[in-house]
Image 1: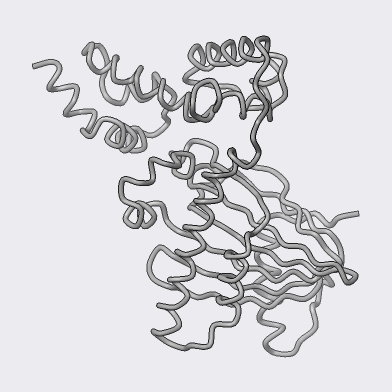
Image 2 (image 1 turned 60 degrees about the vertical axis):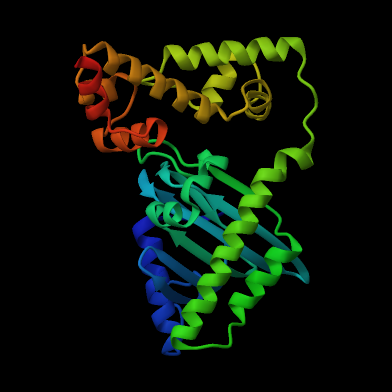
Length: 310
């Protein structure tokens, strides 16, 4: 049976186990062993290198929380078997739920957090290639897992075996972080091509168009992906793949586009304030709405509304 902990309890154990390990003290609660090293590369970019062994599976109960861009590479070893994986999470809302940490194996990992504004400074306008990576704080984040390519594995090993110290170390490690980010983006961009999804049946196309109508009717309180799939009688994987094939974007991307277009129409009509227009299309925060509007139309919503009323 897995051990269930709150997010705070697991974080406390992580801190205590790292301190105990450095002082040669055994783990008092018996969860396992863990070594961790944080490297603050610069403001907005954090790197964590971890080596852990848990005595059993642990389930960590998370609450809803704002989330930066994050990626993790893990190398697991158990019973002579080795496996590797990566996980990518975009910025946005990390939903409440149980996060399972596997036990009875050694896991060496690197974890990187990047604040969204730092990523935007680095990527410039080219982040439009992958709009899912940057979402408003009130929207569920993008997540994807995969198997590291050979180039990714080399960059991970370079981080784990970094021979430098001080400023040279930070410069070297940050260069590898951005190298991994570039490799991950390329992997995410080419994943649909590698999978070569089968052509959709006419019935599936009809169901996907029906799903799009549901989203347009429920801009303020859209269903989850699972709920939407059930509503139209299709599995969630086919719904995700089908949306890309039919509309050339993700389910969230489609919803976001229609939210922004509807908000533009409301502001142009002059009937609603910026705050009311934001609420009318499902934005809980005026600030998040204004930022999304600027990214879409290149102007603040308040300025746009005043220009249309003039």
